[in-house]
Length: 320
Length: 320
Image (cartoon, rainbow over all chains, first blue to last red; front, side, top):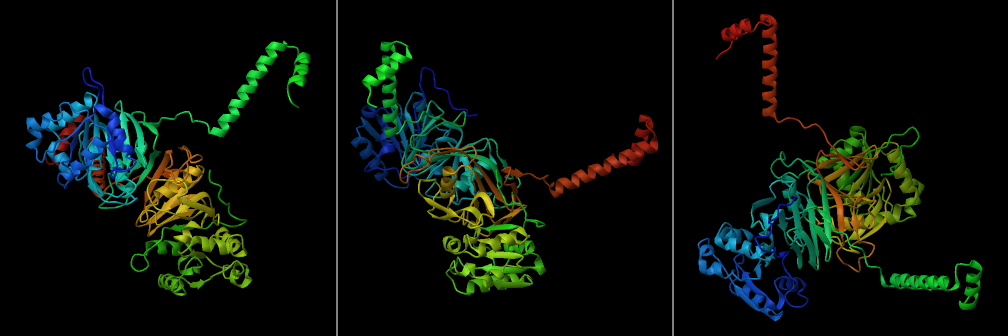
């Protein structure tokens, strides 16, 4: 289903990060720690791309401070502010040895306008192909996918014309990513896009939460909230006929809400279920039972298989 | 799946109404018209039950005015304000010849506390069994189901302990109904209840919209918004293990968003798909083609089957 990029010659795909915005920068920093780890930890050379932001240098300073505090080897900023910038060899060269490319929040349409189809975007792809951690938060998350939510309105019920698609970086194909998912009530707009394009997998990421994708299609959730996946493969919709801003019929969409630690196969579109660890109390019971069984086996071996001998042995050695 | 009440002896089940709140009372009044029609139109004898409300007589006056304006034969109010009231034979007798029972919005836990398990509730059931329209708006919608959302908090992501279930009237079994669904961002709380009880069908109703159920399980949507149905039959969840207020894993829930006119079979849990009417332009084309074909058939009959004669005939009669 998912047509992800294969790794380049001799390369290993890196880890993609789609962060739902408002990731913790002061205390726990679970999400940013995960990004740094995927970028090489103490060896990480991180390039922050703040083009989506309307803030000045301070947006970069925050990430520089966080990643440096957490132990990155280097943190620099590359800020194309036009398509001409994004063709400037000097600016593009900043990405050459990056092990992590972090795109900040802001306006994803601004970011995509400046970089998509330019050597800068090619360099981001190349970094991903050689194993870098690539992604970002909010706007920087949406742009990772092939199809990008440009903007839209909130609300639970999908309606015609409530959201606009445009072209994203395409690091993750067959996918559309929305952010601030729970906080801004974006079920409706994500459902409306999947209703119009049922082949798409809609991925909604809560704030302070990341959809982390390894090997091109193995998603794992990190952070405080959840990642919601809408699979339209089996849906029936009237999206091709609904008028103006009418509510859309969307029947048979499959929903997966995935909290931290959950894993999901984007190609097969299924939860990766893991053997569940037993609660401690239950574990102690099982161990005691195992130990009894081992004792019993020893007893049987020692006493031979005669039931009479065995019963006599038990009377001698065990409390009643 | 759905264990609805069968019709009583000699009776026909009435129509259930779960209205998502804030139904139009002045202009279109689509939802209240549909209720009145199901209650018998100009023959309708409607009992308004305002016990959930914290308002005084004015809440009844509004519905009296609307239903009277729309042509109901009679509109009266029955307002139990305690379980003792709900056992008062005089109050209960008001429901005896009702063809419509309309429960207002307010606090559903107040309404359910006063009436469930009392002769008043029995009389509501009896009215439904003999064919009356029964239901209400907001609180009056939630109480229709067997399992009732008592209260909860908003948000898209399902979390442990974000909502409370209590006992509803049970006119619709195997179901839990939430209201103000889109307007108050209630995906999370409905998903959390279905995750904890996957046998339940979660029904979320938008404002100024009704889930109208005939024959015990045939749902049809009326009004401005949509009805969202969450089917947990195939889901995987960690709801039995999630701690405190953690986001819940809910994988494989099936979602149906149904705008006005959509129909859904609650027992089979499937959309009832209807042959789609052709758009007018396309219809005109098809009719023209049919007419051409009829002309052609007449030509062939008149001229015999000789291709030579037929070609000559065409040259004579048709513009080139």
